[in-house]
Length: 101
Image 1: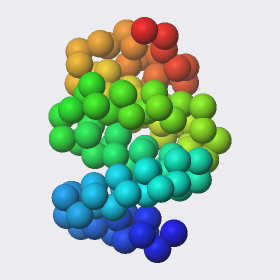
Image 2: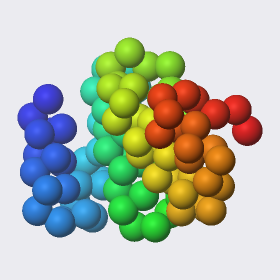
Image 3: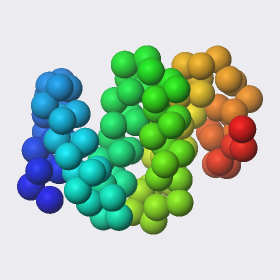
Image 4: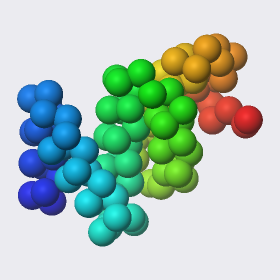
């Protein structure tokens, strides 16, 4: 949990490289626990950096995980689709549905 908190702190401070490396370590080491939240944070980082495909890919890997807020997941996924100019899929996300591709 301390590593996750450190990653979030780096992320909030805009230190993306150290945040990303910590999130990646958590996602690899604990895929069923905090790893899903780390994947969501990595997806959000990708979306903020304009990487829509990466954001959606990461969201899709954790879509069925209970540790992740569905609303937050759909927001990040929707943003990823917006970045790809797939507005219909983005609208589905923002309406609370997981789109099928």
